Image 1 (spheres, helix red, strand yellow):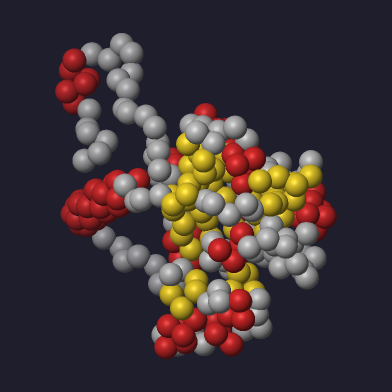
Image 2: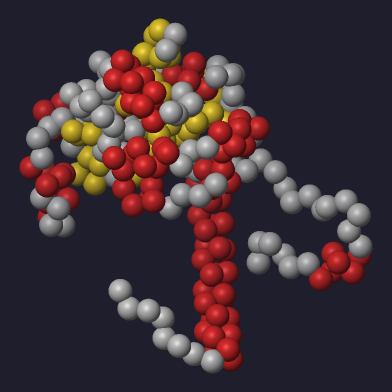
Length: 248
C-alpha cells in the first residue's frame, strides 16, 4: 500500500477543504436516505414465529422486551456448526453494554437470532463473554422469510433482493452453487404498535459494513433518533451565532 504524498501545509488545506465539501454532501445525502428509510411503508407480521430463548419458547413480540422497536441481527450460525461465523462474531464483539443501553433509552431492543439450536448459541455466547439476548429460530421459517437462509428447494432463492441466478450472471456463481441450505448475514427492524408487530426495514451484504454508534442503528428504524437538537444551557448569544449548523 502506497503512502500519501508529501505536501506543504497550504496544499494540504486546499485538498482538505475540497474533501470537506464532499463530506458535507455525503452527510446531506445520508440524511435524505435516512428520511426515505423512515418513510418506508411497513408490513404487519401475521405468521406466528416461535423462537427458543433462555426461558423457553417465545414469540416475536416477546423479543421486544416491552419496548417499541426491535433490531435483529441475523447472526450466521448453521445448525450443524459448533462455532459462530467469524465475521458475525467479530462484529458482535464490538457491541458494548453502553451501546445496548443507549438503544434501550430510545425504546429499542437489540437482539441476535440464528438457526443453530439454543444450546450451541448459549455455549458460543459464554465462550465470547457476551451479555445480550440471542434466540434460536431452529425449526421455524423466520430466517427463510427474512432472506438470510438460502434454500431453492423451498423457494427461498434470493439474498439482498437479488435472485441466485442474478448473482451467477454477475459472476458470483458460488451463491448459486454452494451447498444449500446456507445462511447469510443481515439486519431487520421491527415496530410494535398496540400489540401488533410490523417489519419496517432490512439490509444485507455490504450495507452491514457501514456501522457506527447507536445513532447509526437508530437511523435504520422507523422512529429514527427520536430527538431534536437541544441548546446547551448557559450558552451566550455570540456563541450561538458562531456555532455551525450540525446538519449543514
